[in-house]
Image (cartoon, rainbow, N blue to C red):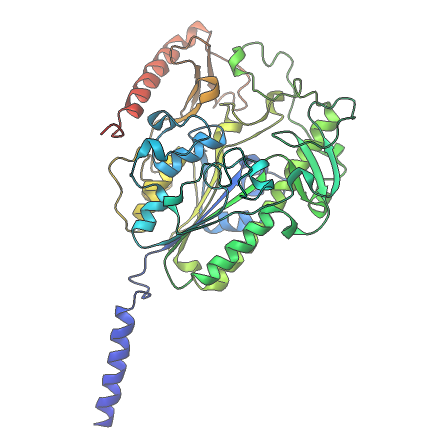
Amino acid sequence: MKHLGFIAAILCLLAASLSSPLAAEERRPNVLFIISDDLTATALSCYGNTICQTPNIDRLAARGTRFTRAFCNGTYCGPSRASFLSGYYPHATGVLGYTSPRPAIGDRATWPQHFKNAGYYTARVSKIYHMGVPGGIEYGGDGRDHKGGDGADDPASWTEKFNSPGPEWKAKGEGETLEGNPDGKKPVVGGNTFVVVEAEGDDLVHSDGKTAAKAVELIEEHADEPFFLAVGFVRPHVPFVAPANYFEPFKPFDKLPLPPKIPGDWDDIPRAGINYKTSKNMQMDVRRQKKALGGYYASVAYVDAQVGKVLDALEASGQADNTIVIFTSDHGYHLGEHDFWAKVSLRDESAMVPLIISVPGKQPAVCDSLVELIDLYPTVADLCGLDIPARLQGQDITPMFDDPSHSVREEAFSVAPSRKGFLLRSEQWAYIQYGEDASQGIELFDVKADPEQYTNLAGDAEYAPVVERFQARLAARLESVRDNDLGN
């Protein structure tokens, strides 16, 4: 009888464990979404950079799927973030600047809100929706940011939200304004300006160090419940501010190689195709260009260290085997290619993003299929067993984690609203059109024969059929994008 009582007790314990919401077979996967601001894939060692080493992002890539042809849907912060968080393309919602998608989408659930509605603890740390940098970071959410303390955040998306103030360009240290400062007399200035500050103090002096620390804390506190944790790092967005030790591997800056400068590189492209920031209009000589590159790389190295702290905390929590981890950026960034700098351009350097997704139980892989950031919402919902709202305009790319050759689209689609620019990027072609009627010009690049996009073929009669085909496809794509349920 004693044996029967013991067996009964064991069976009761087993039944209780099976009915527990924490049972592994019942608990849905967590989501850890990490996004860096203004990060080009070409700055990461897992994407081939041999100068800027990113060991922590690399270790995520070593266990996940690294996408080599991932594209943002807007080539600057506001429209890109509003798009992948709402599940709609920029021209569907009309969010072509720095506003929240909420007025346009009504009570439709955003990506994190969909998880919140399904019982997840959802939190953001720092910049996920658009937030002014450096202003919103410098003021730390006290309301002095021109968009308000939380920028264009969406309160309905989160159970909790946390801002991470930092000194930004006012950090103590050795600083220099590189942009618009040919005689070297301008002091270190704020705004969306190329400034480098080799800062005093450690990681926690700055916004991203505080963001990593808060993310670590939240992982520890919420390891016993399903969570959707969005962690936003603001570097390498200008100003290029990081603790001084992160600059050392890139010194002296004059040893850093710049992309080749091709005489007449801009001669065959429309005026709208010349980026808003260039070496010429920023008055940056070669010394300043190389220092800008060093400042960018130091900022990336600093972010990589913070990513490492978050990944370490996930491992320590015991939830790594039940957590989908995503690392990406809101768009890419020019680092002197074509003498262009920063974002907005629709060339690959600006429109492509790093994208690494680690899914428990899936083998590491490299995927060359075309994907877009707007695909994250339906894909992660599917992976977590949530329904995929029919209204979403992205594609579910879940099959790619078992078959990296799986394809969901012929072209990736991205826009640069401030230039009225549109990109259709296929495996072979990059088609860029300025103005819906192409009145401001066209660019066509054969990216297989010309991967650096030096020769615009749009004016060549031989390629007129290719241009006509892409014009028709772009018109159809825009019509499809605007055919949504937002008016219902």
